[in-house]
Length: 364
Image 1: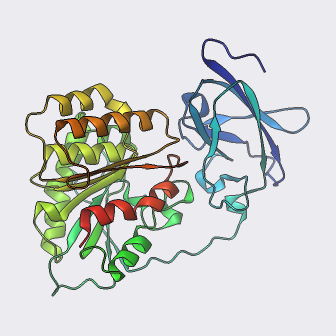
Image 2: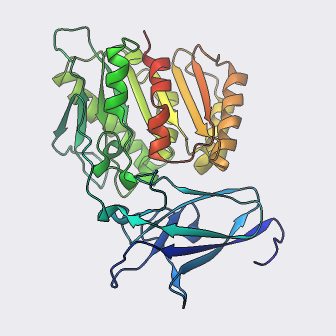
Image 3: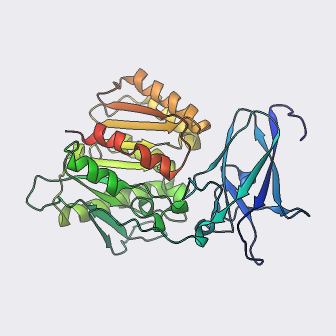
């Protein structure tokens, strides 16, 4: 490999196949760089060498962390490179020098039998909403624990972005769900949290714009949640109408949007769980707003976190956490921060730590 120059390293991925691949298919890499397709499952096609292996070369900043997966063009056909990691997590490359990275594909997900993961509790889908001022209309999914009752104390409600990723692997991004039903069922049975239900709001092709309150579509999405989804839920089910019992939650862009909505609408959402928030996406704006704000929601509870292998997201997490403390938030009272050791930017990582904010926000 060419030596590292000006802080830029040259990485070459070399992929060999132990699995069978249809002759009509191609092999792709999808990752957290534009050069790797920016998480499009058919992001960048690998080149085949004369020896039958595949490769791609790209540049990466020294000290950064590259994450990627391999597919035959869809998430259902993503590659398995470790038999103990199914569905597969991201391949993590710590960029400390120019180097070759060799990978062997053992199998593809669509070549394995589907493993059943029945939902604990009850999951109900509701028809498509009007979604006023949004191009893409969508339904919602509501999860209830087995203990749900119309006669009990009113339930807290957790409103979650990217709702297709929460309960069922078959519907979720890259085959990994958050296991929200399993985690909440366990916490409820142990009487560690108050009674609650979950409302899953699926994303759309306009996700990047909708999950940012600074955009026109972001404002329309927030109004859709507040003016369409919430009245429907509160009118149909046994729910608390108090802000302190309304949680807004999500990851990445969903974490950013949850943070923004908690700051903008504290009289609606008194609690927020913000996983691996995409603060870098609008860093100067979000930091400037919090820094200049004269009336922050100190009566609310905010949880923010990061995996320590999330590069710019990890850096922005620390800056935001320090700023919130400086502005008057108190750790353990109305603020909780968490850095997950060796964790990456993926659904399985968020599933592993989902219980942490739930106990902080809904603990009894």
